[in-house]
Length: 378
Image 1 (cartoon, rainbow, N blue to C red):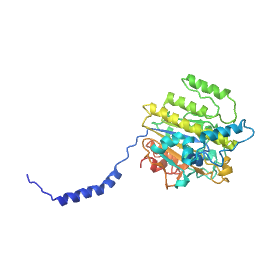
Image 2: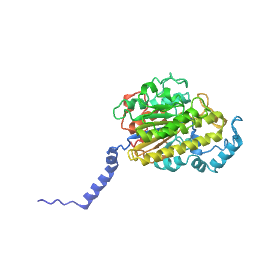
Image 3: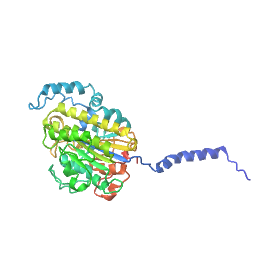
Image 4: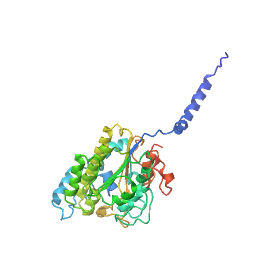
């Protein structure tokens, strides 16, 4: 057998070549998708300012409307709970799960102070157009109001439900009764539980029976939606019972209290939403079919105005197109709070959610915006 002898300079060149090729070889390694389930939580009208800065120094002492009892006490309690000397401390006090977990293990977009821009693109900057843009992936100019009318377009949820691997494994829960129209409940083929309407299931657990009774019997401050505990606990019980692969949760109190002018209750609603997200995530981690296999997406449906305009939003309210996004899951690189990132829009959420699940929504629905590659491991 002939023995080949190589000089030390040859080995040095070979090692240098392999090191030089290593990034390219690594880039060609296919990403192994781990996500089997997606949870999309939307917090109605929660501003990016509170998410990234915490309680607003200009608004923290706002008393709110005279019609709301104990306005001074509410404001004092909110200041005690959520006021801190720095924005970093304030945001941790307001949304501890976001800043303890998502900011370390996932990604957050929308802090304009760091060059991160997230927004809705529909130009109307209110709820139905915002939800429709987020859930379908494109803007439909015919959607011009918040009327509870069937969405003329299929959401990504409805599109997924037509596939055998997702059929019967999708559900949507929301405080606002208009989710019936946004998801086109009569057409979509999966459960949509919205507003005060009881959820009928077989079997109907004692917990769901109680929730249904509360929907019927509690005082209705807003005629079109209950307080957020109702849809949240409905969703939690359904998840435990039916184990869906794709679930939507829409929380509404942040928007309701903002329109009412109660900054204290707006902060309380934001804090409660953060707690609910944590409880949902903890439940997911306790179930083998979800643990390490589930991606969480959290977004609002629109922003709000600046300063004294914080109570409002719409096409004529400056800043109400500004939103934020949070992603947490096994496929999302842990880049934390994004800085100088590419602009992202709510219209990208539909294709991004589908992409986590290994589905190409953008190819099937060509009007839809492309996925956010940064969060799906590409």
